[in-house]
Each structure stands twice: as structure tokens, then as C-alpha cells.
Length: 116
Image (cartoon, rainbow, N blue to C red; front, side):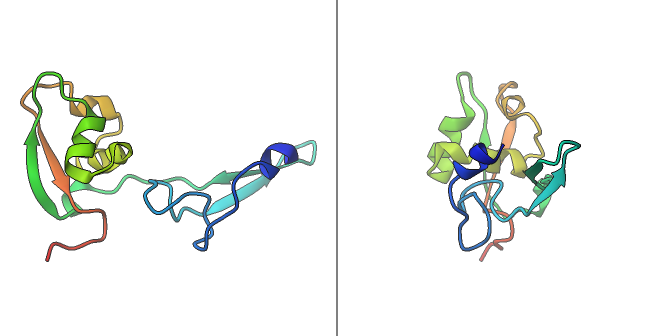
């Protein structure tokens, strides 16, 4: 286990292994001791925020062939930011956001940033 932990990237100034665009940014780590004496380090649980708490920028209506990564790239400038769309639309499963043609997706500012 220690060999694996030694291969993990160093922590940032915020004390996390994840950069500021990650959904895991800022989450604390904790550890537990196994019966055989090894220490296992893991992230604390991330609770999904309520989507209606995000500042709405616009709404996107899902069309045939839409993919969440493409929507994220178009509206957020980053295909890996699809998780922000999930948060803004209260979705645990990303694919559910594009399963229904005509569904309206909330495109929002990141959590904690008020609309000016």
C-alpha cells in the first residue's frame, strides 16, 4: 500500500490531491487502520449540492445525439466539467441528463459564485 501512496501526485496548496476544476477539490482526506496495521487514506464523502442553489445562466434543451461532454465543452469550455452539469441538475447518474429528448438542462455558474 505504501508503494501506491508514494506514487500519488503531491498535494496542492489547498491540501488536496485534486486541482480547482475537479469535483473533489477541497475535500479532506482521512485514514483508517486495517487489522494488519496498514493505514488506508481516503477522501471524505462528497455530498451533492442542491441544483437550485446555483446561479442560472441559461437552459439547454436536449436534442437527439447530445452528449454531456459536448454540452459541457460548449457551455462551460471544458468537456471534463460534465459533473458541474450533474450538480446543477441534481443528477447522480450523468447519462440520465441526455436520455430524454427535450429535457431542459440548467447551465449555471459554479457553486458559490453569485450571478452579478
